[in-house]
Length: 315
Image 1 (tube, one colour):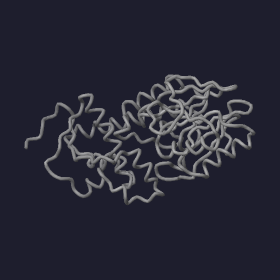
Image 2 (cartoon, rainbow, N blue to C red):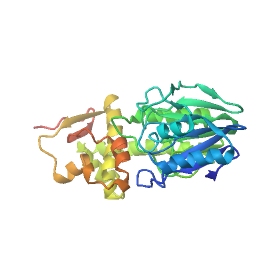
Image 3 (tube, rainbow, N blue to C red):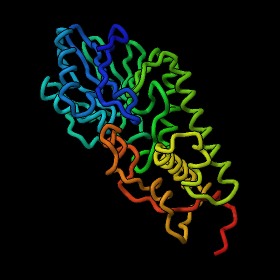
């Protein structure tokens, strides 16, 4: 276990992949003389469960609770075996679809022997996402809302861009002065306000790029990806397409963009970007996480997008 502060230790799962970076971060919080809280037990992996159990033995303590930020397969499945091994209850968002003992309310405060943890509902990346705030250290445990490195995926149908942006703004307004941010992936962050500013600015800049591209005329998602993500590894283009779809859905709901089906089938390249064959993915690439986070279960049609108010194409 890596010690990050007097109260916080990190246990990183051995599941590195393009989606999880160096692996999924789990955390052990000291909340009393002989009391701990686990955050994000991680994937279904006996080694990670045993690491959490060993951490408690070293501390001469037991787990008072297991908190799960959200239900994606690199964060939640380890909760049940850790609960079975320790007897600790599992706490999660009311919308969580995995087994849990208690649903947590927004702004609820969990009180332990000598620590308080505030729960924030944090939709956007996933509808069942919570962020936990260790008040004694002004520390945020942000799951997949904010990572220590890079940016997080927001993809439909479970991801919602406007909800995600609202979550980021809420974090900055309420906890911009926090002392530490511990994400679900990557290193810890000490300049919390700068990180939140970076995330908010990145989303706004990407949307501006999208609107500029749409202003040049009707265009498909594959064409948008080729323009906006030209410098990105092409293996990541399907993920980029899902990211752009989240923006387009938001803009369409707001009446700023319209979408229409094309009177032709997609090319092979367009089909591969919109609906990649996930069965061909190596599990070492984090296929289970890709399926959960990118929402490729429902086939995406080839649509043409344009700014609202631009002339309809003549058929």
